[in-house]
Length: 233
Picture 1 (tube, rainbow, N blue to C red):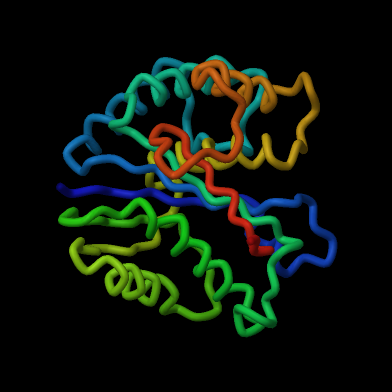
Picture 2 (tube, rainbow, N blue to C red):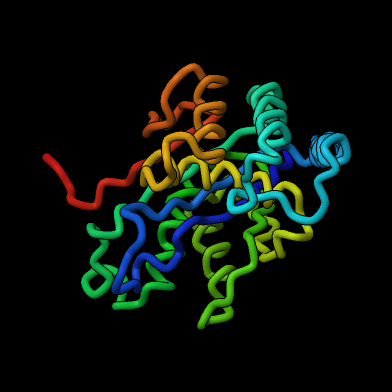
């Protein structure tokens, strides 16, 4: 089976910031069968046309004037059941030791967590194409190394692509951005109680019939991995 994965992140600067604005960095991924891609894109574009939404839609653009569009988009996401899945990893930046574990390189640490996000949902005998929102990296081979590491740790699957694309070119990256923003908002609690963004978070929680919180590995629709970097017995 051919699988496509679309990725984005929130608060990517947390590892280097001297004045962090959040506790958790969240890296998220949207998983779908390649055969469903064109159909999903067509339906998302139809929703955009219905609400006259031009340009990019994303978490930062959630506003009272477009709340109905975002609610309908989340309802559509939920209605696709497990044909459209979301998984994210939450990293508490205060637990990250760049010097000890990541060669004092925040970029290296960032892509190690990307690996953890993807590796545990890769299954034998599938082909995977991974598309990440474009990010300006100090080293230009980061995605190539990520692909190589995923290939070597999943020998019975095939990593066909690990590619950066700009979010404005992909409604699936934009949907990922929205879902990452929702997860980040619930973890970091950085929106006012009656804001449009908080209403969008509650909309998804109502659809899921649960609070957005860490899940076990086998939750398929909206999976959250809160990585524990302290270790335990």
